[in-house]
View 1 (tube, rainbow, N blue to C red):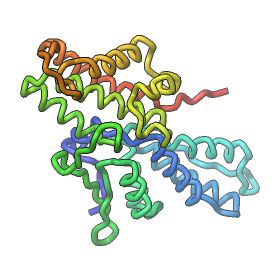
View 2: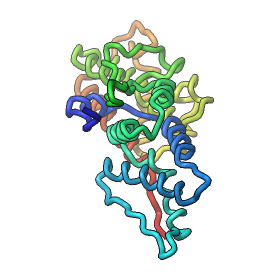
View 3: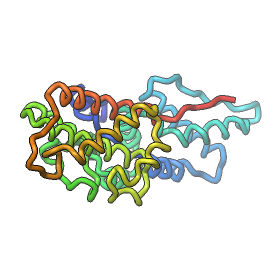
View 4: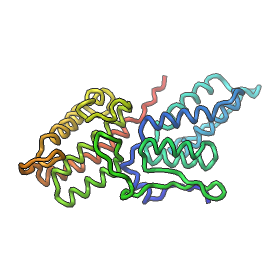
Length: 277
C-alpha cells in the first residue's frame, strides 16, 4: 500500500522538527527542473500537477486548468503557476512538507535519493524509504539515535534539544534548562538566517542579522537575547562555575514552555505572505 499520510504518532514526533529554508530552496530548484519542458503547455501541466498535490496536502482548493478555444493557455496561467511553484515548499509547516514530499515521491515526481540527500545535509531526522511497488514510507529517526553535537560547532537537531530540555526539567537541573533553551534559540536563529557563515558562530556573533531576518516581534527578540546573555553568566549553565545556580523551578518551567512555543511561532511566521495585486 502506498503512502496514506503520517500517523498521529509521527506528527507528534515532528512538532519540533525544523526543515530549513536552505533545504526548502533546494527542493524548489529540483521541482523547477522536474517541471521544465520546452513545450510550454506540457511545462504548465507539470506545474499544475505539483501545485494541486500541494493544495491537497494543505487543504486548499484545487486549480483546474482550462484552455482557450485554440487549446492554448493564457499568459496569466503561466505567470500564476510560476509563482505557485516558488512558494510550494515555503507554505507548508514541517508535517505538511513531509506529507507533500511523500506524495510527490509516491507519484515518482521526485528522486528519492536526492530528497534524502538534501534532508541529510540539513540535519533533519526525516528520510524516505521505497519498498516494493514504489510504496513510500517516512522514516523518523528516534531521538535517542540522533547524534549529540557540540553547540556552535555543528548544527544540532532541535527535536533532540527539546527532548534534552524536558529531561533536564524533570531532573530539576534548572541551569541546564537555561543552557539548552539558549542552544535551541541559537539553532533556530541559524535556520532563519540561513547563511553558512553563521554556522560556527555563537548567537551573540550574528544576533543583529537574526533580528533583521526574524519575523518575531522586538520584545520577543529581546527576550531571546536576554536568555543567551544569561546563559553566559549563570553558574553551571554550560560554562562551569563554583557558585550556586540562581535559576528557580518556576522560571525554568516558564522558560521551557516559552522555548517550545517560540520554535513553533518562528516557523509559522516565516511562512511567506502572498500579496495579491
